[in-house]
Image (tube, rainbow, N blue to C red):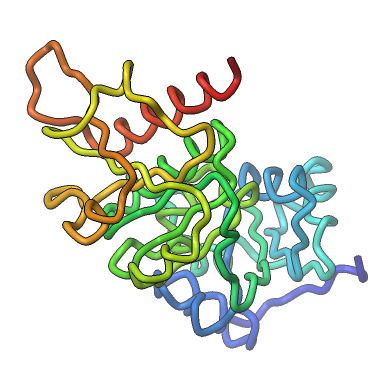
Length: 258
């Protein structure tokens, strides 16, 4: 880490760039960088040994030894007044620390990885929650079909709670990109397919989770090795896609551990 530098102008080029990143949920795609806000995400970044190019910390945060130490994970540190940091924040109560991270360029799917495929899942909270489940249950790759919520947007980052840094993330894919996978696709459905508790799940697979209203596309259903449903004895029509993902990924991981 180089010595910290203070910024006092709202028109500083770094702050102008970060405001654009914070305000445009998909702006990271053009910039090749993401804005990671808050000490929890910063700690997750450091725990996974993922590099940070810049840390931005408030004056008050710099006075906190723990936050100052965390900021030191970045190659460069900038100290700003709280009022300027507020302009970068997407939180109702702004944090005191944030990081800029470089995103992988031209990432391609690993054909052999246990994966989760997001087929046009549009709610940022659902996407972030699914990323958390994927990381928790050992599915190290998430592949997002075009139409899925932007994976590195501020809302998905907050919902993911640091899971991003444990995963290989590839987005903007067309369905044909899945043809390269060497693991079978297992599609989820609310009304058809084998019951999850008794379904003959492959030991390594790619779970396909569909759009909140439309489910998995007909094209991906046709390509899937099997379709699985979660029994719901309580009589509900369907589960939220993030809840369904947690149930399916847990069951898959449980069986793989046996």
